[in-house]
Length: 259
Image 1 (tube, one colour):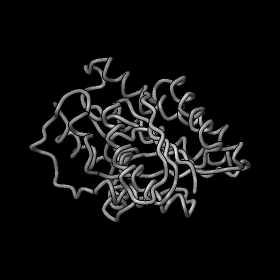
Image 2: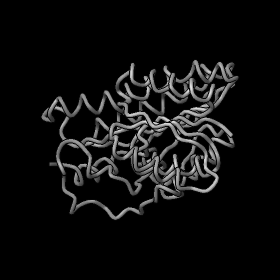
Image 3: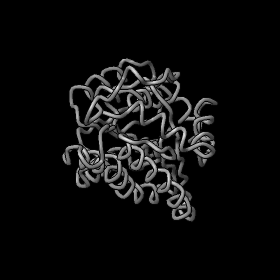
Image 4: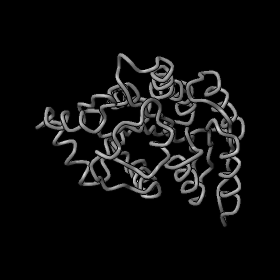
């Protein structure tokens, strides 16, 4: 039985992870900005037979003090922390130059600052527990040329690069780091994405993963202490295309995303 800290736990992948870990008997610290969604998650977990306990904390990952408070509450309740999953993130579509700065700033504060605040708050607790594991959620677009979605792609490139460096920094502390490279998943991502809607009619048909399947894959990665995880062959092919024919993929993305 461990203690698992999850940001962005109010929906989709974070929600599925919280349920799956609690179902297994682990204790879950679930953070998100939407109190009503956290209440629904808590009710769902409490309805499970033989479940682990849940601590919900309404907090924004972009707020360093809020992340520190959430970690402190978890340690005060269970005395330790074993797994950190920095899942909170937002998308954005639109021109780098012409997009509203407020949208770009929200993306940067959530996808970059939020990950850093989560790690910086949680790692001291992992060290005191004798080690543990960190999961960072990246995307296949981290290595893709993504005109009109460049801010999101760049934020995920940051996450993947951070995972590689952080893994070496924390190796002596017996803390593993997994970089999870995700493709399209059934979430609220598109509905909540900031900026312009783009040309949805031109979007290619791409297979969609279910959040429960993603959660199961992440849990396996933690158990195996994997460094990098790509959950399906389709996404491996996208990554290969990003490496071999980046210009062609960039042109295809231009047609899809241009507003």
